[in-house]
Length: 337
Ligand SMILES: [Mn+2]
Image 1: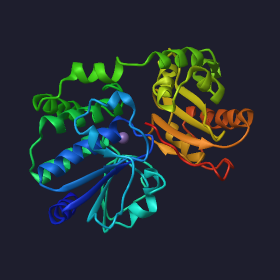
Image 2: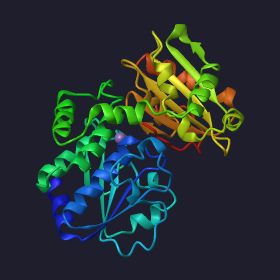
Image 3: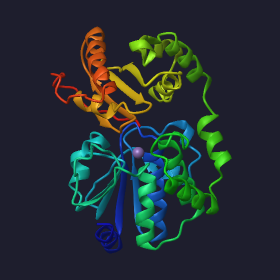
């Protein structure tokens, strides 16, 4: 399939590169790496993101090329859809984006919905960034420093700084190759992990104040509502990493973060350590993600939502989570891993 994608890339001239809403390091890093790859091949490239790019990623080479408005799509020969398990993940422009002649989907989510025949999907890959290597090999284009910095960032962030179970020997070999091409690990790590705005720390303090432990310490949950956000002048991007704080507690196997969104639905981020499969939990509620990192969006009363989660998480700890729990029909998936 990579060969067919390469043929299409060679044949087309004008490209749109898109990734999912509320973009993370993998989405943005892969998107900008793809931008540089195509530019190096002499193509015309537009990068579109419906949502704002979190400030920590402003150092990435090519970030100024990201546009937040999408003009006429007729000018594009092909669209490259990155880190998206379904077309709708790009946001409200999905129907127009889907109308572009060639749709190429490069993704690593278990829940991938076969968006396109032109697809490079590998759920064993740590990140979409790692998958782009196969494309680069087949395209036989070089890896510039700009590409290296973006791909390193993609892999770094989706592996939780090389800590998650998706970190394989190959992942580190690729990271090493990127360092040889000019990516500087200490600088990238500092930009991403040691440049937090103070408001994020205040939010962390508040979120940890809501910590509830359950099931003999195997499950930890925190919650943030819109009042807590407003009082601290926090934006949604400041909630990033909060759920990982809960996972970092000794004995915790499943970490839950309930985030009340402005429309009063709850976005539920899930993380696990060990065998507990939180992707199944999220999927039962209409969401998706990975075994150790998943999310979903649910409308309703928080007490009832917590009860539903308790049941599902309990099953996932027993390794037997069922997909049908009578979850609200309007639950829709929001992945942030
Ligand atoms: Mn990813």
